[in-house]
Image (tube, rainbow, N blue to C red):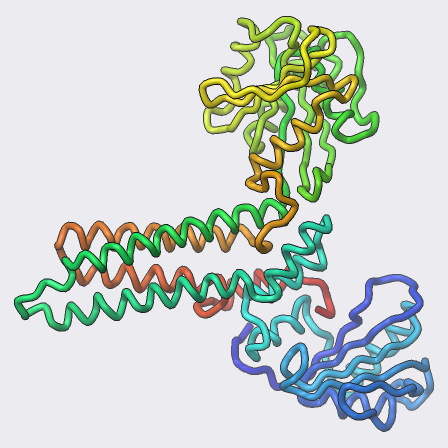
Length: 452
């Protein structure tokens, strides 16, 4: 894949597979108007539509529909673009695509229209990714976050940090040029204050991106604890359906059950697991093994216990089996049977919830706590959608800034501090595509749908 301006013309069906009222064939490239003319005859004026008969390469009429033309560079891709909007039958759409390819176009790769929009600077890389996020949004909140990224909110904040970083680089490299003078410019308090401000702004942006990633990718939450404390009942209550089998017999859950939930716009994969305990039953042993495997992949563990019994030695033993780095939220279930009211308590920094999965009392507290853990709090909005690669780029930017700050503080080899600042800017530029590789672009756009 090359980042140079393409010279060929591409075509793709832009509507989903299957039958529908309307099907759209999209063309983009230097020969888009020529190919469309040979299919539909005289084209309408730019940014207007006209009813035309559509013909195949042999001149046979295959459909009738609307033609819309968008002259570059004022189009989605920055090239000449034509849309043929016909009837949405798969045979008709296939005939139109075959005609376009026979007349000089070629079938587009996945995401190639958005790739051309990026190459022609109609979108930066973060905005192009937001197009795919908007299409794949799993909730209204995720769609709004993707739209904000598409509008350029993430890109503007990245550009603001880039401008600050560039200003710092100019100062540091200028100071190196005058290092033979008596004034030690690199020891100036203002330089270190600006660097600290930049790092603080970077941390805020990374936190915003973490929230945006949660809305896009969701959260993996595992229900764990001793047998027969109500984990499966809690899963059913969160899902609003009888997903898991519930009986009074300990060890009923043997396998790992996964259910995808929408907690007020936050996608959550809730994973119910076998109770953690020693057992001679080989089937239950396998269930416990799978439970531990699920816990290794989780981002949050709901440690469920029976509120009537409190936190006992068996609970402590089960809790000790959780991965040490896994955040844990204690859920005291069956508070209706213990006579306690639903409540949220925080003791020594440890949040504990009292609720009843059977009656539903206190489930709202659990939903709010999960959202709070995801960084969404009580707000329904997130600044913008983001991806793991954005967060990784920000992490590496922060590491280079920290290294530069240490170099400047030690006053040893300031040239290395300047190099750290340059690498920080390169890492930041990966988000919007100012610094990118062909492999990176290939991975990103290959995840798009055909025709977009």
